[in-house]
Length: 237
Ligand SMILES: *Cc1c(COP(=O)(O)O)cnc(C)c1O
Image (cartoon, rainbow, N blue to C red; front, side, top):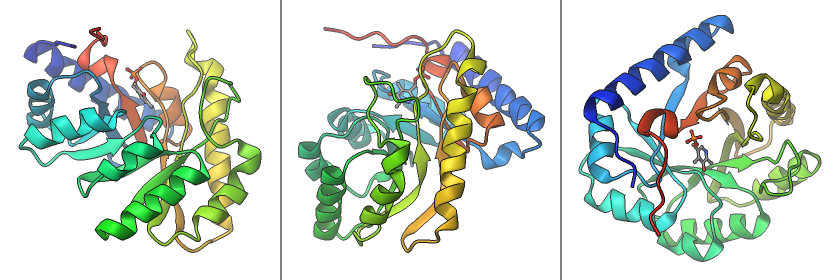
């Protein structure tokens, strides 16, 4: 499990926020329109509470069971995001505490979410995950199929598409993946132009610990930052 001292956590958060401000400034943007999403996979609840008390409000988990375990015991008004590949058989556990799902990547998942939404009286806010880089190891809708995919999801009343998400390939130098972020924004602009029902492109979720500044320069308004806030993840067997 990841442990970070309180002092280190505070320092990390301040430093990330300052880097967000600087990146926004370079792009002529207002940093207040950018949400810092703390990625808390493997991070223990007490540390999540400390981060909350330091002002962080948005938290992302990539495993449904881990999200539920934490949401059950954390008595703070966290906004919870589901950011990782979502297995269809886990959808039945999702409830009203989920504020945004970042990883809609296939029709089967959309249909399952729609059915779950109907059952519990919930319209899910979701982002479509796009595999911009085309890496085989990454999930996500391909840019070519994106419009058709979005059109089909738009027919499902219990899902509102609120934007796009992508994960860039890892690069030592984040300049190398700038094109990925630029491409995601262009795709969002394209879709917005179609003005489809149930669809808007309010959010661009892109950028992680090693590339969030470039993502902000290219228009990200949600950055998903884990290790730069909470330290390196340690997975116990
Ligand atoms: C783990 C994860 C992150 C955060 O990664 P860091 O490099 O630790 O910032 C962001 N997005 C997704 C989808 C993740 O799974």
